[in-house]
Length: 333
View 1 (cartoon, rainbow, N blue to C red):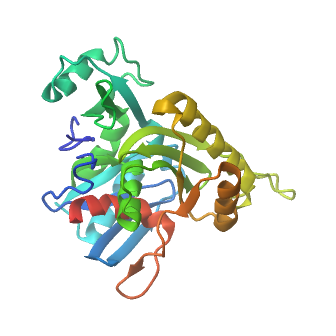
View 2: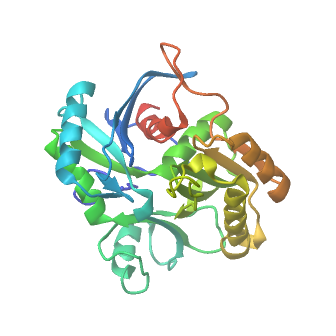
């Protein structure tokens, strides 16, 4: 199954139960964030060591809330990146922006065969299945964790938004072939760290700036995603919003608790509950946050990676690179 691969239509192979990692022809991975474009090369997998980790600062207002606001500026930035990183005429993978990703578990008739799922949902989207955008690009895979009825995991994004990134990469002389989603990339990296059995009910929280994206996994399947902007305090001197490090950890914990309860009473079978929190981000109060989660939700709360990931020169990369590392693992393993 593909999540938007060989673009101009479709998302990349979803790494699910039978294949958490999927080898393909050499594809190079980069990510677009509001603050930077990031790119890494993996040196070794066990232990996971990077050959290099690179980023180019994204000027303000080029990407806003997941959308490309200044196409010309992005194309110029990517052209420089392609030259500096040796990506000209190379196949590249990137991530669809969180704000334009939908994940749903949807039932389908038992008469529909696996190979017919894409066609079935193509017909149903817009008639019985409604998405918050009218130009969806989507992928679908049978949800084998539920043997009681036929269900599938539907992952969709807004085609015009994904297409804008694809066009910018092509303008920079790169060859976009795969668009993945951040929750799968982060889960791929976490699975390498913790070797989950699939029995865990995992809440995966990813903080970038003031944006918090929370996804839920069970049996290695992504079941849910929600993105939100956190309220941050205002400076007493300038009146401007402070950065994410000033957010009270309890504010984040309460949002996580709401989503954990939503999962238990609305999504999970037999009122199963979240068992693990995985946290990704550069939040300065991470340790305090994780302890508060353990005490308030009575679950395991873990950083996405056990120890900081390093490059061959010994330098440590920040959590801001975890998304692109997880994306690269898909191609390297």
